[in-house]
Length: 332
Ligand code: SAH
View (cartoon, rainbow, N blue to C red):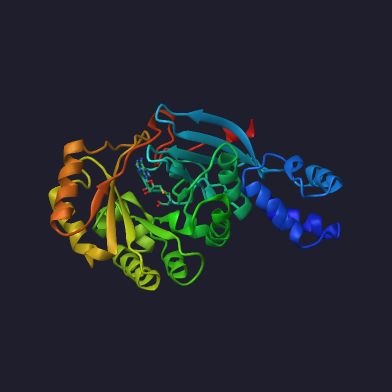
């Protein structure tokens, strides 16, 4: 729900200041309508129903993958498409993959979101409404900003949303912001906001290849980004998660694993997550499982902790890099 509109409406009706918190508490615990908010006067519930839409997002479509992963397509009030994914794990974790923008202004060559039109930054309420949608059907306990968009280009809204996620059951220590390496954002994140985890989408250990894959590298080159990550780690005393997409014949050779280990220093500041490539219709193909495993072993040999990401939701195009809703789908 649009929390600013809520506060304005309450203020116009001379409601006590604790009302907004009461409404939020109900919403964060999974209420589905104002009607449920039994500690609010009945006539106030009716006013809110008429004036403050329960969600700032309209659900347009949802899909469920064989592995239980769910994807929701929403439209904002101005009909921008937004996609969100819920992943269920056997150990009980329920992890939300949130979008920070409708579309993405960056043009990483392997990512489907980069090929759709960039819409705009999402508001904190639009980010929270993605989470509330899933919270209404069951508890959630983890969030990653790995949906559409670059969260550090919309840091004010992302941080405002992160402040409230604990009310839904998602601890700050279980919230991860993933970035292409948007340098000013990493620097800000070292000094302000809740103590979330930081993930860096690296994908190549040398500037030439990284710029080819991710044009943003021309603006913020590798060495500067890694230095900012070390600064973040010094301030926050947590290691940085490095995401490395495994592209067959592009960045998956042994020499490239050695180069990666050489730039990620000190090793204890980083942990590498190797990501199997999800097809997006581009020129790439994923590295074979053996190549991924060899790459992981090489990193570990060099003292760098490394794991392979479990792929989820591929059959409904809900996996990493596959979010690319069309404007048409959101407008319906
Ligand atoms: N803009 C942020 C947040 C999006 S996160 C960022 O780039 O970090 C999305 C994650 O999925 C990133 O690590 C991204 O590199 C990865 N990804 C993008 N396309 C992918 C694909 N086709 N297959 C697997 N992972 C992909």
